[in-house]
Length: 480
Image 1 (cartoon, one colour):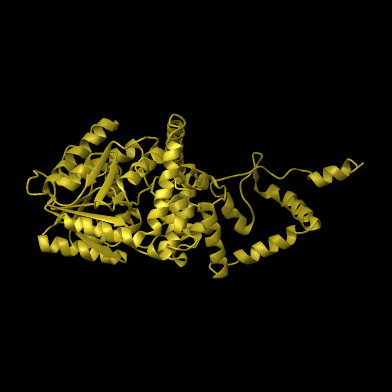
Image 2 (image 1 turned 180 degrees about the horizontal axis):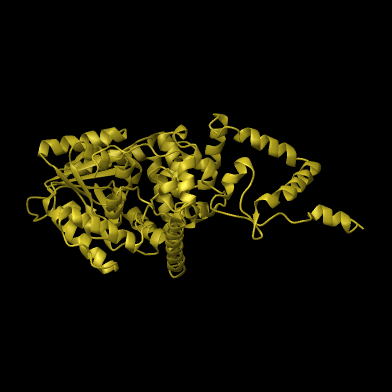
């Protein structure tokens, strides 16, 4: 917990080089992504009726976005009728301001959090720590990432890039700081036991618990949390104040629609029909109840979401943060997870969502450089979001606004001119064959001239054939 606001991400060339020169991170990200994708495929194959539920879930989200204002008004009315407080936050700073107001009014100093990508999006932890509050992540993966001072590597598996040895070193450092006994070994049981001992006291001492939310049910004013760890229930029941920060697009109309939607994140993300914990929260503790918070605050975050309604990008608001697109993305695996993206949301959905929410000028490299146009993400998305199409739209906007890297447009124009004729194509092939010997090592090309050298960072390729098809065809007599 640094007490400092986060620094701007390093420039894209720096992030790219760091990622490509970290083979262990790439191996860890690839291993995690393939495992999750394999689990999804096996679960879907064994659950054929799930496809009908998925299609109904897509339609439910479409209907909800068409009447978003009405559903949010209904949700607000139901939550307030049960004694909760609802506030609309236009921008990230509005979230931090409201949470700090609640903390100061309550005299709170200690905050525990359940996993929440929305609070990561608004950098809430950093703002609260800068104001002198103690903030502790309690999801195991988020706890590990917080101790390391890093961003989550994956939407679902924040510490996917960490080995057991890495985690043990982090825990040993934390134990030294607090004067506790470090974990003796690296087994999952020993590491989890250490985290459980450390976090138990945090739960008991916290004055505020903060969560995100997977869904909001308008007809009853219910916040829905789905998790595979019990920390979410501790965060929402032990502290006297519970604050939930949820994007406005998470609202659905009815419980019937929720029944179809609630299966989609675990099924598409980790291959489970349902998560281990489904928590349905409807306001503060009632007089006849023994546990639960004294106060419940629901912060509905916009942060540019409403501006996507009615545009070509509206279907991005159907995203349920399942991580399915990350698990099939070859670029995500190649750069070792989310660290190269320079933003909270990584993978294909991050390539689209980050420029839409933060502005294309803030991250022009995402649609330009972090997509191979393989279309795997579009096929994997359970909510039928047109991710490949959106990336192309963003690239067109980038070109129209002159945001491409210096010399990029010129290089593409020269390349197109050269390869638009057979003579130009054959000339470039001959020149390539003549010059490739300078970068040939053990039968592979490991480098290239000038700007092409960056392409070979972290990869190699087969050399050009000694004879092109056209040359072979002519040598054999052509059409004869």
